[in-house]
Length: 76
Image 1 (spheres, rainbow, N blue to C red):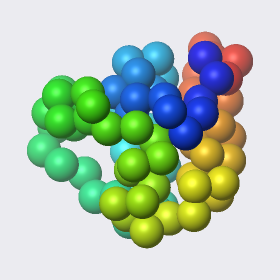
Image 2 (image 1 turned 180 degrees about the vertical axis):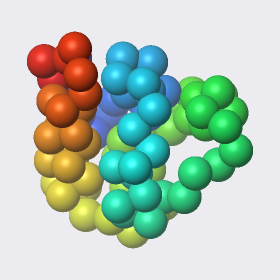
Image 3 (image 1 turned 90 degrees about the horizontal axis):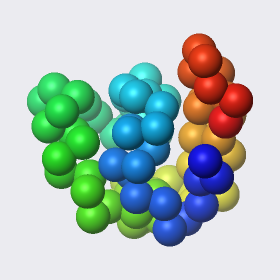
């Protein structure tokens, strides 16, 4: 799966599982359990998440792409 600015955060979670540690690097705190985060991120795009948390989009995309390549069993 290619992660772009228009990718839904929920799609990233569906594809790669709980990557909360990566999100926390950007100050995006854990919100309840993993399933709760999946629910509240249904409409949230990567670009919007970056804006909300005041993270440069290019840096956020690069880090997400690197992190998902490191998920066991995934080729990013």
